[in-house]
Length: 407
Image 1 (cartoon, rainbow, N blue to C red):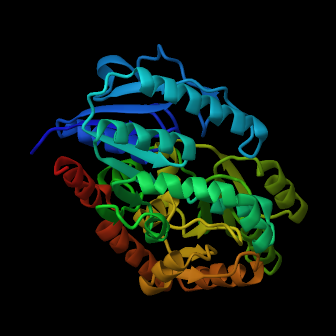
Image 2: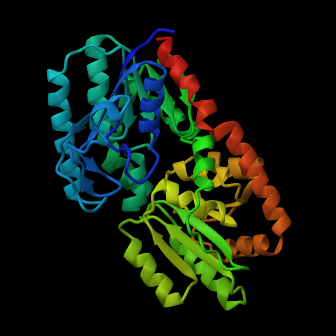
């Protein structure tokens, strides 16, 4: 095995001690464990927690990490959709460029997350200057995803984002290897770059052993006898059709389903709006806030249904939460219109697809699972089986490590 010096550039990484269990931190840790020399470059500002990271924090420097961590300064922002965020990311990109220009050039491989588009382009250009392989990991397909915010007619949208699409295609073309969190995203990269040496779908997934260890943690999860939990985890923003699930459980309560409760784990810019809606409808909803991964999993495994609530028009595909839903062994109700996700739900027999916005149909499937517990258990067993075969990072990520070692 050829040991490599690997530079990973991932602006939205979750670091040890923060809430979440991020793909790029996991890859950095595993490559380091295999003996590779790894540097993880990320922002000094946590996107998830909306707070600045302290350089002197012992959790992130020195012998406590098996890899080198570099924090690039940016300005920070309070709202995900804002000019403030654009300015902050541009600040990150400027400082990243300066860092790469001054850096001692000893890497064998550059591995970068996409987006940010600008940061990914700098990473690819840096790899080209050194004449070393560049791996692009597509987490989201910007600028196409912007329509979930703007809600513009298709012709107007294409005209507006045309310069950004050209820019995105230039970034994709820099990649020697294209990785993506779904076949959908890999296909987008391949459309722009048909000359890459390999294309690989690598679901974000979860580490089965770590998930199960979290599931067994002895924390006070109080679930009243007879309650039926529908659980959502993730961001509370424009891309997620949480409003429909709130309306669905409200409808169910009004028609006699007093034990059905919706648990919402997460935070985001639309949190106040969703809370107001739940209050207006007097819906049985619990806003649980932004928990650590370790504290969230025990609630998830005690749930009865997982809600993959994705808004109409959102270009989400196989998101990180799907792996956790599957490992929890839950039947899934899904409103994501991405064909890959809909096929996964239907063909693997793990739940039901419904149209975003259709709270009556959403309520129908929740009621069906409430009454047909054996059906729910079978769908949940199928979920866990799928998780173990296709979403366990311990089984799927080694293909990435071997690819890096063979470059």
